Every structure is written in structure tokens, then in C-alpha cells.
Length: 275
Image 1 (tube, rainbow, N blue to C red):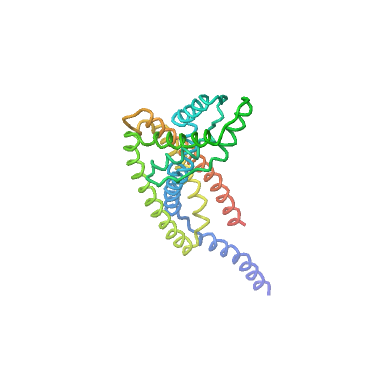
Image 2 (cartoon, rainbow, N blue to C red):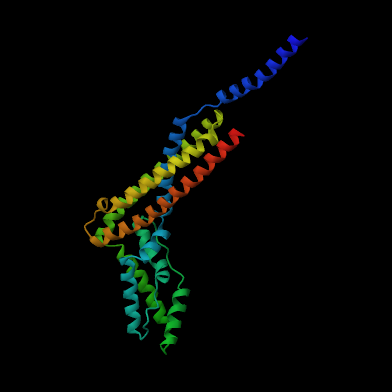
């Protein structure tokens, strides 16, 4: 009886150790999958970031309104208002942005909007006119609005800008196709990771490494962009560099956010796996 009880106690303590060893050995690390996911995240972040910033006419119009080109258009409009006795520079970047968007559309080969709602422009000019002790007629406001459209389209209708537009539109198409291909590869990678039960185990390292690569690529591109952007006009080169810098700044921020999210996922997965 005593021998049997000792054998029973021995096997009772041995079985949990065997189970723990089997569970530990059943988990397989897949660093290649995490690295592949990091590469896809890098490509997706770069292409998506460029699509919503550099290749977005609305976003670009906001950048242009704060650039030298936008300031030139705004100054010309305010100078014309002074000829009507309305000083104080009532035309601001926010008021000029919708009109500049009509010119920016030419850069991307898009059809510009036929008209812009001039309610904000009318309100700003009328308020400034009252402050100056005069009035702004509908004829004056209509003339300023038409002049804004004319100046915006002329700013993006120069030969140098048209030549740059060809390169921008080509880069836009390449960016779109790369983004679509990356999304398809991500779908395939997701189902593969799901089949090997390695979704969250690869998501954390993939996001972290992908965010790090995105941040590095964005920073290097930010520094080297002025060397890559070439144009026969210094004004066009400076404008394209400004647009690119703003887009790359957003991409760098996205990369940092991915690093933080990846570390959280990585920590959470390890915590639950050890539990």
C-alpha cells in the first residue's frame, strides 16, 4: 500500500510538469511573419499618408494658402480691395483656401469646382468696409471673388507648374496602385496568420517595427526631399517641397503612433499568454 501511494504521488506531480512543457513547446515564434507584416505596414502607412495629404487637393489647398504662393494671391486681393477704399487685409488664408483649391485641382488633373460659395468672403469684406466707414457693394464683392478664382488658376497654370503636374499625377497613380497591392497582401497575410493562430503574436511586433521603419523613412525623406524635388522655377520647387514636408510630417506622426500601439499590443499579448 505504501509503495502504491508513493507511485501515485510521483505521477501526480509529474503530469502537470509534462502539460506545462507541452503547452510551452506548442507556441512557435514566427519572426519572419512579423517582419513581413512590418514591411506591409510601412508601405500602407506611406501610401495612405500620401493619399490623404500630398495627393489630397483639399489638404494641399490649406498648405498652399500658408505658402509663398498663397500669400502672393492673398496680397494681390487685399491690394485690389485697397483700391476700393477697404484696407486692413480682410482676405485671410481661410478665405482664400476654397479659391486656391480650384487651382490645386489643376495640379492633380482634376476638374475644378465651377463656383465657390462667397458668403464668408462677402461677410469679411463687408465687415471690414463698415469698420473703414464705407460700404462694399455686391459688384465689388463679386469682382473680388472672380479675381480670386483667376489668380488661383493662374498660379497653377504656369509652364513650370504644368510640367510639375505631370510628375505629380504619375506619382499619384503609382501611389494608388502600391496602396491597393499592399491592402490585398495584408488580407492574404491576415488569413495566413489566422490559420496558424498567430494574429496578435505578429500584430504587436509588426506594428512596432513597421512604425519604426515608417518614422525613419519619413524623417529621411523629409531631410532629402529638397534634393529630389527639381523644377525650372524656384517658386514651384519651394511650393512642392512645402507640400511634401507637411505630408511627411503627418506620416512621421503616424509612425510614432504605430510604435505606441504596437508596444501596447505586444505587452497585452505576452501578458495574456503567460497568464
